[in-house]
Amino acid sequence: MKPKSQRLVLVVLALVAVLGAVLLAMWGLRDRASYFYTPSDIVAGKAVGDRSVRLGGMVEKGSLVRAPDGVTVSFRVTDGPARTSVTYRGILPDLFREGSGVVAEGRVTPAGFTADTILAKHDERYMPPQLGNQAAEHRVAKTVLK
View 1: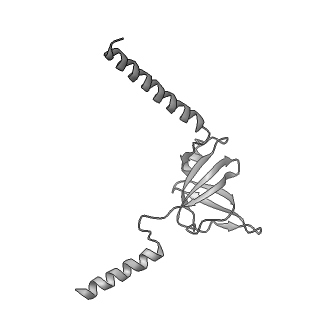
View 2: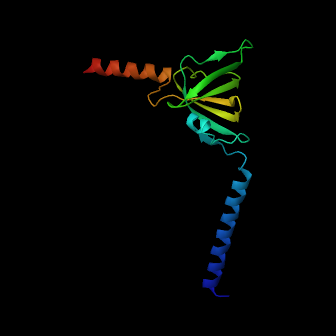
View 3: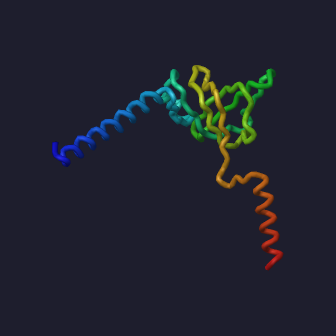
């Protein structure tokens, strides 16, 4: 076999191996995929009830209700034109509050949305308190030195 033919065979085998690895990875992660929907998508019926999805939007002000058991909460997520009721059982993140962004992972149910995980979103201006104090001190020191 000529060296040129050997290289061609090796390239073809490498492509087949890479394609096989990609297909195996996709097949293994098919149940792990979580699709992102807005409340408008859920109201329109675009979300399928038997698979895990992510619901994103803003927590509607005045909609947060805590159950007497102390761990179950319900609230509404809105994207402006539509809203979806969410029920969650667990401890909420520290950044979770009414009027802020949220991503809820869970399933669509006839009663609304049942969340397994709540991810609170913050805006791009967020700065941890430790860094915020250092930045303020740096600004003060900079203006004093001028």
